[in-house]
Image 1 (spheres, rainbow, N blue to C red):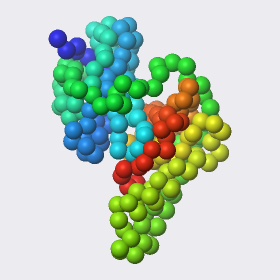
Image 2 (image 1 turned 120 degrees about the vertical axis):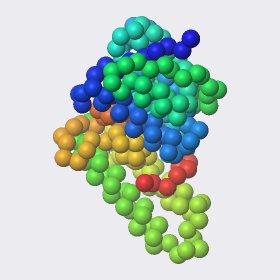
Image 3 (image 1 turned 135 degrees about the horizontal axis):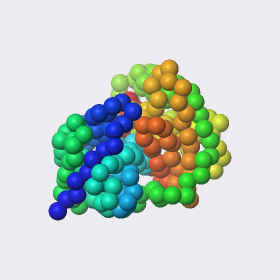
Length: 236
C-alpha cells in the first residue's frame, strides 16, 4: 500500500507548502510531460526529498519538504510520475494528506542521488547578485542568438552557444567545486532564486564529487565529473 504523507505548514500559511511543490512539479511537467521525480525520506525523518531532472544538462533539482503526522514515521523510496504526483498533491491543499502515486521504472539518474549528509559550506552570495548574474547571461545568449544570420540559427549552433555560456565558472566562486553558470541558470529557471528585493543568501556547498547551490526555495546539484554535460535546451 502506498504511504500517505502530509506537509507541515509553511511560512506562507495553510496550503503554502503544497502550492510550492505544485509549482516545482508543474515546471518539470511543462518541460517534459513524461517527467518523473524521485522521492526519498528515512523513517523518523521529518523531511521528504523530491528530486527532479530538468533538461539543463547534468543537474538535479531538489525540493526538501517538511513532513508532519504519520508521514514522518514512513520510509519513502519511490520513483513516480511528476504529473501524477502533481494531481495527488492537490488533495493536501487544506492540510490533508495525500497518497504517494504508484512507482514507475526510473531512469538512471534516479539511482545516483546526492548524499544526505557530509555537505561543507564553500561560499555564500547575496541572492540579488546571483539573480542579476543569471539575467545578464540570459540576455547575452539572446543577443548573440539574434546576431546570427538565419542560416546559422541551427539547433547545433544554439546548443553550442549555450554550452559556451553555461560552462563558465561562477565569478568569485570557490576553487575546486565546479560551480558553473549552468547551475545558476537551472536555479533561475526553476524559480529557486530569491525574488528581487529580498535579502536572502545563496549558499554553495560540496560533498565529495557533488556541489550544489542552495536557497530557501530549493537546491540545484551536480557532480563535478558530469557538470559539463551537453545542454539540451536553450536558456530561458
